[in-house]
Image 1 (spheres, rainbow, N blue to C red):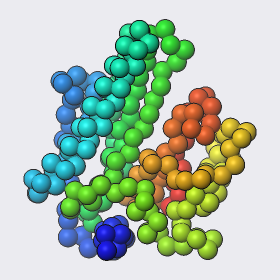
Image 2: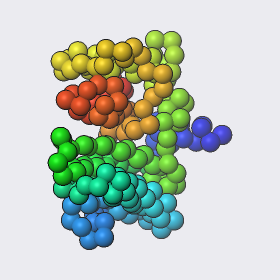
Image 3: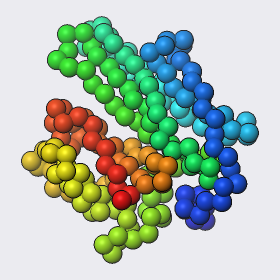
Length: 209
């Protein structure tokens, strides 16, 4: 039943819910660490969504401070910014946090993109597991299967003249980080070093087309 509700929320949009309002907050007043504050007409929904977003910012800051202490280095630069690729009137909200860190004397900085997806009518988190129930079929299997996403990934790499690790063959599972755009296409995020060298950077693949 839960998967059916998720599928209905994603693709049988009724426009009962209105798009959420987006405000901006800064972690401990630091203007370099910004994250969205979601405002709907349901306080309990706001609390659910905003607690997840702020917890992710807290996790990042804590992890970087701990790593700096363990490595006995200073943080040269750290920032968090965000974008909202989907704020759909049917109740789908995607938040992408871009987390940046540079340790002094490091060879280069590091960037991570964390995607958080919600039903903005209920506040429930939408995870990668829910994608098995939506999108229909493609090539005889679920549209958002590892096999189909691998095919879209390789097409994206060819078109953009990128390259992957030689040992990469096919995805065994879908990336945890994904987001919806306003047309409800699903975009998958592959982090630095995940499937390609650092120089390639973060790879984002629109698997909905």
